[in-house]
Length: 359
Ligand code: NAD
Ligand code: ZN
Image 1 (cartoon, rainbow, N blue to C red):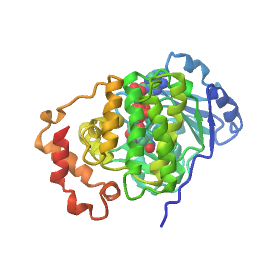
Image 2: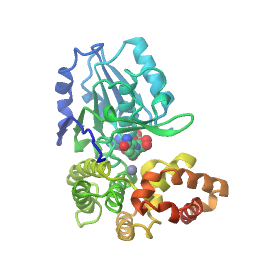
Image 3: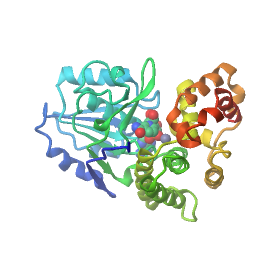
Image 4: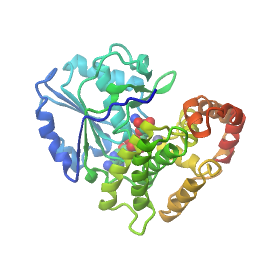
């Protein structure tokens, strides 16, 4: 069986595209409870973008601080319950922010129409009904959250996405002006998430002409942004990064991630390390699996003088390392893609532990 995926319905791309959000929303102002729910990264509170949010008096604008923790099931349930009890069901949910805020917007849109706690729906195709119309406006590029069919949530028992067709945004607004202020280290880590998506998508069994076409183009853009003479955080490169992020996400949708994401998930789950940063920490030591990719990655790190700590594993206990290795081992789809169907003959919790000890 081949994968059968739903994509974003509408995309507007270009400098200043954010100015079109008001018109896009006006078409839907009579839906449901006739108000909009904006979820906005708290970074923008008091910034110029706050004044440009096309909200009307009936709308709700929630600023969300994403620095204290990644999105949680409790946070989604509380947001849904408070909006529903005060005003009802919004016409549209709009997420303005990086992967964290976009995932919050996707998840809350689904939870307005699906009853009970979001913990009930963590997994593949557990959501029962389509959510309400939702729009993603990325302000950090790299994770591909703007195009993916998952909203990653941390719950009391598991860190797992609400993953189904209806999670995908109905509309995205890609305005490269919005990512200009991303701090340099984060610009690098998030962009490397795209780069790693492509390297992993390409180097595995599920790679095919469709995923390859997206990865090839996204890698070309990544090299222009992070490697070439004109590399760096410039407006021209931000234009490219926004497209690379989308295409990297599409590449892995039709293929799969691999060893780096498996290792990275262990770091995030056990130590709380953030996704893009965890990927960089892991990828730096995966030369046995992705020799050319890791070599190029190291050149990019050096070129942009990015801090990437070494010898972290000295501080970790054997129990923590084993716990991380078990999380990574329990992602069979990634190992099967990267290593092959007989991966269990080559990869064990012990061999994964040895990889963590390199970090
Ligand atoms: P983020 O949303 O966590 O934001 C990172 C930091 O950048 C925050 O401090 C934020 O306040 C700040 N920020 C956001 N926009 C800014 C701007 N324009 N200028 C300055 N600062 C800005 O970052 P991210 O890396 O995009 O997202 C990570 C999250 O995405 C994690 O929660 C991860 O689980 C999730 N994720 C989701 C998917 C998916 O497919 N759904 C894929 C990968 C990761
Ligand atoms: Zn990733």
